[in-house]
Image (cartoon, helix red, strand yellow):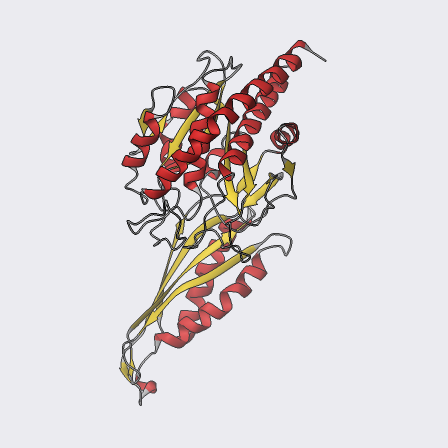
Length: 399
């Protein structure tokens, strides 16, 4: 056993103990944050509130975002991300600290925020081998991505960040367990919007018109076959239509119709090929029916991939912290944390939670989703474990 290993184990015990001392206050922070959520693009009040409780000054980045540095400034640093935004969902949990402003932390960001405060306060009391960079990111739930803005800002580069971590609560993970998993964990997410233009007319004389509605229907039903043609069956890919709109009356053929869909892919190489195949398919269907069509694909988050070596170090630290490592998390959900992890070694840890008092667990983004009180402690321990795992990763890179 090397002196570095002994020192890291001493640090682990100290950092975990000090973090646990902060949890009671962090639970109260969580309730305050939960009761006053801010939607994407309007996060300044939440950012200012959290920054006041951080042990170091927090520089403003990416509009409402904040970033700071704890520990040595002359060495590589490890960044921990927490999201700022809530969702435009009216809360239905009935909690004593429920939101009443028409927005809701229905994705657990309030838990992440409170846990990060606890970890930052604890880290400020420890002798850290590498800087810890807590940062608050706006607009995780909306475009344009707050993560991409932070990457473009260059703050992570200025602070010499060499690894980046985050934790996210998830009801699909057993309580007490954390899922990391090597490689792709979340999908790339893009939005597809198609407008078909035909010729309007009377419903009784369809031969004198060019109805866009059947064309839209053919395109929608055929697009998943396009995915099967382009993507390997070993790589998840899906297209879900969430909007379909055309016409105003049963006996009137409209001139225009449109649909919008979310596209999810888990393979970097297949993603651009899918985009091109969608454009070609829509154009061919429009030609076949004698109408015109436009396709607009908005590129969102890339595939979120956990660094394999980093995961090994984090999993070992999770076990030492008393957490169970569950099966890897694989989801066609998306998170713009991927903008960081495609540039730096990164790990997103999914922390198991439950909504207490119900046998049917609400999903993320549900008006009834309310992670249990102890989730703050578990997320904080996951973040501490990930920081310690990042220390191990940087140690190994320096040898």
